Structures are given as structure tokens and as C-alpha cells.
Length: 529
Image (cartoon, rainbow, N blue to C red; front, side, top):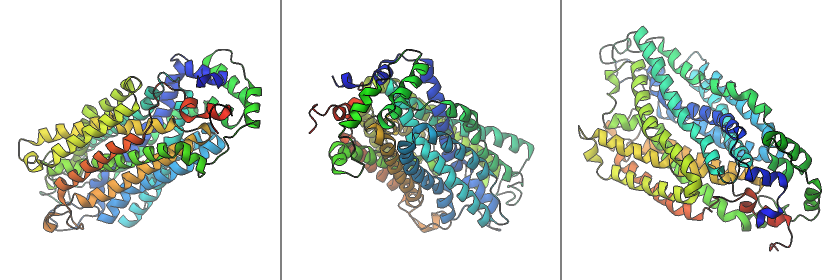
């Protein structure tokens, strides 16, 4: 059996019963994801308000909206930062250790959340420029959290419940989206009650009260609170035993750290590590033929599935408000004032999160170690494809009065199966199937591929979903292919995700060393030539 060649400290972790330290690690790592989701998705709540405040056109029958290039920048710049952060901190996590880099990413998130709410300038261009600058660096910090949180949780977990623990960290995203929506509802209700304003069609100027400028700033800044609360605990977490023993080659330190965590006596077996270092054939790098031979197919599977998923997932999530408006679930903008518009968008987003997003995540948490990663991902992509086509082909039926509730139910089910499916599994699997010395880097590459898909989704859908009639397209946008055809495109993308899932290996119930083949590397005669 492969695990026979393993160090005692790693066997102790693999066989450990679920203990308090597991839940502590989930909360510490998960709060980063709460902040990540809150920050990345709350921007979709305030973009319409930013348009009203900074891009009002006197005499226009419709409220001001962000010009296409500004909207794309505000929505997308954090995603670009996230992509860069995933690659950089993923690499750094393997070079310096997970713990050393972990506090840096959280501090960056805290500072930039607050700074983005303090965006300053004497004109709209300056305000948007400073907002985009801080949101890029916010994204950079968020990006680092992906590979580090996943790797730390996978290396701390036992093999029986590892999938559920990693998925639980990621599931905090659901609460982040929910938290962003609930806070926006409360804040906009308070401001709407205190600063009464008529709708835009009654009074175009008076519908946006000066105090509205505080609303979007407060919503963005509150994202820093959960991250600040967990900063101290992140700095106190010991380095993972797998990094210390297998990468830093310090079995003594690994045994000491895990003896405290597991509250049991563990032998260090430093001599075993020293022997492995002498006769090791595991020095190949990321860009070597040996890496390509062993892990190339798996890396292609994790990158392609995450890329395709995020095209569909982010285009749906960032532009929920446009889809809701198109089917009449949110009143037209001119019938509301600026603050009430934030309230209605937040209410719709919160309802979707409560009914489908959050339950989907936790279905994965409870079932991933029973069903396995592969089955859940295949089921999720398949159901997303079916529901997307079911929304797209009879689209003209769904937009008729009285049918919009049915549309929202179907739309919610695509979110449910995204989260009880590839949105969770694409995060879990890359943290389990690569060797310890490249694990954080490979997770970062997989996650960055996903964010590239998110950028395609966020920017592409903005233009794709525009009305085919140029006169009915949003101001400044060319005619698109319409929401119906955009949904068909997303259905095809989900189908491709189903096919690419066939490249991804199953890691249920296996130790990290079994999955990565590191035991074979440690034993030169174990069949590896």
C-alpha cells in the first residue's frame, strides 16, 4: 500500500478523527473566501448607482449609466487582479511556505477594501480611476487566497473527509454573496427611509440624493470587516506538516507542530526524509517533460473545466440584475430613485443566494466524500447545460407577464447545480492531485485559468446580451445577439465543461501522496523508472 512509505506525521494527519482544529482551520480560511465573494460580487450591486451619481445626462429619459468601457473596467479590474494574484501567490506559497504568505494576502484585502470605498477625485474619471486602481490590488490579494486556502486545508485534513473540508472553505463564498446582499438591503432601507427621494421619471435630479454617494462607499468598505477579524488567527497557524516535511525537508519541525495540533506524540523520522533527499528523483520542475508526463493531463483537466465554468458562472452572477430587469422582475430604472434601485437589485440577488447558491455549496460539502468529485462535477455541468437550454430556447415564453417566476426558478436551479457541481469541485481537486512542492503553484494556475474565463464571461456577456435592435441596446453599446442567444452560448460552454471533466482524476478517499505519486518518488524501486 502506498501509504506504508509515508512519514508517521502524514499518516497521523490522514487518519486523524475530525477535531476542533479542523473547524478552526475552516473558519480561518473560510473568512478569506467570505471577503473574496463579498468584494467581487458587491460591485454588481452598486454599478447602477455609480452611473446615476457620476454619469447623469440632463434631459435624458433614462437614468445615467456607466459608459461601456468604464463598466467593463469597474466590473473586470478586480478579476484581472485576482488572476495575477493567483499565479504570483500560488508560486510564492511553494517557494516560501503557505503560512508566510497567508497573512500578506489578507492584509492586502483589508487595506484595499477600505481604500476602494475612499476612492477620491474631483471628477467622475478620477473617482473611477482610483476605484479601479484599489480594486485591482484588492483582487490581487483575493487571488492569493485561492491557492493558499485550498492547499492549507487539503494538507491539514484527513483523507476521509478532506473533500468536505476544502469545499466548506469554498462554501463561505455563498455566505459572502448572501452577506453582501443582506447588508446592502439594510443599508439602502435606512438611507431610503431617512433621505426620501422621488423616482427618476418624477424628478431626474432629485431622485439621486447627495447621500447616495455614501451608500456605495460603505457597502464596499464593510468587506474588510470579516478579514480583519481573522487576521490574528492566520498569523498563529503553524505551517502545514506536508510543506515542512516534504518541501522544507524538516521532519522534526513538522512532528513538533502536528504533535501540538493533534495533541498526540509523533516521531519525527528525520532520517527517513534525509534518505529520500539523497536518493530522490523528484526534482523535476513545472515545465519539464517529466511533469508533463505525470501531471499534464490532470492539469489540462483542472484548467479547462475551471475556465469553462467561470465563463458561465461569472456572466450569470455579475449580470443577474440585467437578466432580472429584462424579464420584468425588477422595475425599470426610471420608476425608482437611486437608493431604492440598490435595494431591489440586492433583494433579488439575496433571494437567489438564499434559495440556490448557499444550499448548492453545502450539498457539495456533505456529499463530496460520499459521491466523489468526478460524479458531482459531471452531474453539475450536465444539469447546468440542460437548464440553460431550457431557459434559452423558449425565452420568448419566459418573458411574458406571469411567466417570470418560472424563469427565476429555472435560473436559480442553474446556480444550484453550479455550486452543487463544478464551482466547488474545480476548487477542491487541484489541491489534492499535485505533489506538495508544486501544489500551490498548480492550484494557482488552475484558478487563474478560471479567472480568465470569468473575464471572458464578464466582458463578453456585457456586449453579447445587448438587444439585437441597436435602438434598444444600452447607451454606448453596439447591438448584441440578445439575451436568448447569449444563454444558448452559455449552454454550449457548459456542455464543453461536461466533456473536459473526463480528464479530471478522482481523489476520493486517497491520501495526497497516493494521488500525487510522491510515495513512488520516495521509493526508487516502486515501479517508477
